[in-house]
Image (cartoon, rainbow, N blue to C red):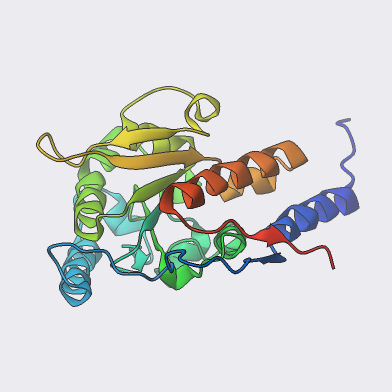
Length: 246
């Protein structure tokens, strides 16, 4: 008989980990750029939004692979077209497939807490995935599915032109960086993501996927993700929230 699992302990650990990313407050910092401060670029927010809508329409019609016939809804991505931070995950799960929105299940709720812990709102960032459709049973993406779907994400990145991409989990990080290194070797440092040969790289920070945190609760894993996000905030010149103890 297998080792008995203490359900109460598992639930408590998950709650502690989720609560860790709540209860942060920003210290007043004169001259600190606001999260919504617009970047100077070639496209206006309205133009970017229009282009992203075109991509979303293409994604919703896409039948390039079998996932187009097994999905309930495509999940193109959503968020601020002028986002300074773009979060990229692996692919939609059951909740995302049902709603057509990225990161809306338990992992998405934890991602919202991580974003809030950074002093930001979901509407300040852009959230997308490598795959725009859910693989049946949440299996790993196949190579042909990634090849067919990745151009949509690449176009979104070019339009949004984020200052930093946060790759959530090993699959997203490996795909964007074209590497086979494990997430433990990739996280915690800024790496370069190239949108084109003649274009400057975008900084990429790989970190653990929220779903991984939910499955593998530990103070150490939780701390590593927060350290990764602190580096992102520092790179953007944004204040690092301090934890409220009251």
